[in-house]
Length: 261
Ligand SMILES: NC(=O)c1ccc[n+]([C@@H]2O[C@H](COP(=O)([O-])OP(=O)(O)OC[C@H]3O[C@@H](n4cnc5c(N)ncnc54)[C@H](OP(=O)(O)O)[C@@H]3O)[C@@H](O)[C@H]2O)c1
Image (cartoon, rainbow, N blue to C red; front, top):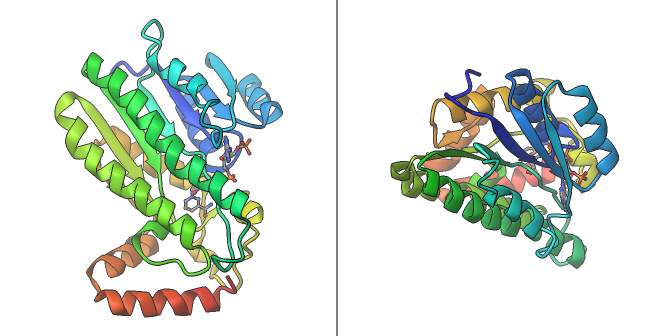
């Protein structure tokens, strides 16, 4: 990535593992100072020690609406402005909608939807007042089609993609670039955490967190609205967008069965 002119500091949520950690490492390699946000303090501190840039660590549970105010305050600090906000933190649940753990689902909506919404508003306000800024939201290809047995997760990602595309149009003329990256299956801790073991998915379907992070940052630097990393994922998204929706629903139901979701 060639960082846009004058980027000094980025704030990355969910930087303690997976795609967020890869984004943090790539930004640091470009000399960009970081504010790292997640719950696992030990992971964030270990990463901060490894990186050759200034790093602040904010230990915050983003499912907690009052705790998020810590991140809001940091985004609004005009003494040390954030050039790039990365809303990456996220969790998933798998199972029949009525059987999933209600608290886990509510927490997921808190992190995947409410926190993204709150932080976009805080960063958008600070960035438009400066007339420049960048926001990267990490969504998923799951947001483009129905997701039986991951219904709430898919719905949270449809929200993130829709919000991002609208904000790209609204905030762009005010100097703020909003980009949404929609990864497919990516090798991280995500699936273990969600209790989902994708069986029989060909190895070539998977991407690494580094590949996703690279595509996302290149997309931000290029001012793109939506980035779908990987040719297979782009083909799947195109099909979900142009095919008759009755066919898409049938394919989604079959995929859920095949994947043992
Ligand atoms: N892996 C995939 O196949 C895939 C595909 C499409 C989209 N995505 C999206 O990519 C993003 C990153 O996920 P990943 O794959 O890198 O998974 P991951 O390795 O499990 O990372 C998730 C990150 O989110 C943080 N997080 C989760 N709940 C949080 C909370 N309540 N408060 C603060 N931070 C929280 C975690 O940190 P702590 O646990 O330390 O809090 C961790 O740093 C997510 O938005 C996910 O939906 C992943």
